[in-house]
Amino acid sequence: MIRKVLSKLPDSKAVGRCMNYDLKDAALIGGSEAKFEGTSIEDYNKLGVKKFNQVNNKFEPTTGRKQEVVAIHEVISFSPKDDVTNEQALEIAMDIWKEALDLDKRKYRVAVHDKSENGKTHVHLVWNMRNNNGEIHDKKDDYLLFEKLCHQAELKHGFEEVKNRKYLNPKIPTNPQGPNEYRLENRGIKSEKTKFKEAVNASTDKAMTAGEFLEFLHADGYTLILNGNMGYSMEKEGQIFKASDVGASYKSLKARFGDDPQFSDTLARLGVKTAPIRDFGSIGGDFHDEQSSITEKRIKKSNRVLDTRFDTPDGHDFFYKGTNKKAFEYSNGKATFNTNSRMAIKAGFQKLTEKGKPQTLHLNGNDDFKRNAWLEFHMMQLDQKGYSLKGFTPTANDKAELEKLKLENPAFKKPAQENNITGSSTDFTSKNDAVSSAKGSAKEVASTTRDAAAALLDGLVKAAVDVLTSKDTVGLQSEMLSEMRVLAAQAEGKKQNAESEHHQNKKSRGPQYRP
Image 1 (spheres, one colour):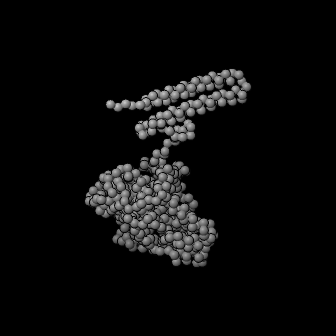
Image 2 (cartoon, helix red, strand yellow; image 1 turned 120 degrees about the horizontal axis):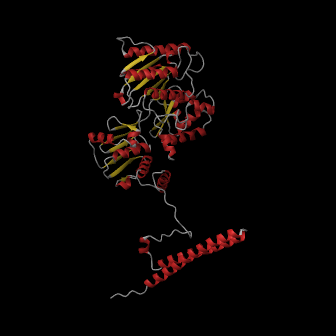
Image 3 (cartoon, helix red, strand yellow; image 1 turned 90 degrees about the vertical axis):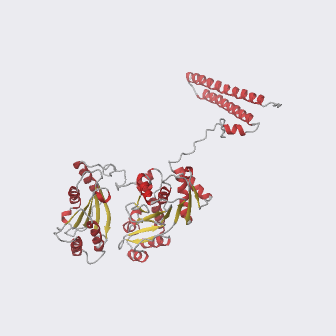
């Protein structure tokens, strides 16, 4: 069982839209007010919005700052392996919400969606932030309480236990679902969110106020997408993150810069209501697929980034998982991207190469897209699988960046450390070197071996002298001398063998007579 907050609703219109979405196709519905037989879903939701507004308007302060979030939309989902009916799911979820949110004392709407929707039974809840007495829910870190209650419900009803709960292991990420960024960071790889956050922080460092921070973001090419009076998301190069996900919410900015009365006006002036749709580039192959084979292949391979991080309803439009944000389109052997994200590009390559038939892939688009595609092509080692890539010529900096990424990625074997005695790396066993060496190479090899042996012998003798002059104990000196004699004898043997090999090679290089 997993509880997850899906959205924070800023006004009654958002509350109404959310209620309609949740209750429209639900298997079971309910709320703080009973639904009478013959009442439509629309009327039932209108009643819910009215009850929310009655409470909020009654206790809303007449002066000062208005309430930014009036309601919460969240869900409790069950594992596909859990044997649970819709009625049982509703009862169990309500028990958790009543204890964690004191749900009996506030307005709400609830809806059960069965397994036919996404393979697992889940229960939606829209609840008013103010209870019936006007008190705003403000329990810090209440997710810990939900984690505890969900775990207890799993044990009580014999459901599948979620192992990666922060309640059970405080070291894992707060969100028990999909800690992909956590896994990437553990592998030494920066996630897309981390890189986006670092870029945003660069603008934070330049600003003096929260409003000025927005000005710098806008100047740096970020699109500010409005999510309410003070809430917003940021888009750049096709990637979108909530401000709170990258440490740029007004609450975080206020803690850093102090209160800025002009923040909301600046956000309204610079922000837009919808994210722009961008076309950054495309990757095309020398082949075409039929829709039936597209879907069949996608289902068979379920461990790829394409399947774990993206959703597609038809095999053509691919969205970031759990969102309505399109990453790329696939049609007739060509993937067209709305982002420069290397994760999306990797998914596109996986789609293009899922049949495993080597071919030439063609790049089109801006330079940043082509560069990221070239890097991802080689990081996926597609060149070693028979594929080729056209449309981009890498610079020396691009090649250096690729080598850096390979060193940071544990999937690539690191170059072995060279075994070097005299300070130079010489491979005495390489057959190719022996064939291509000049006539004097054998002499150089023997000479190098003799020099190494002589140096080793001199070092052993010097070490023996140092030991004799620095140790006081006679027994210890005798023991060390005995060991040194053995090592010196071995070194002398190696020296003689090298000299003998040199003379044999010299003899074999004598004049060769031909008939």
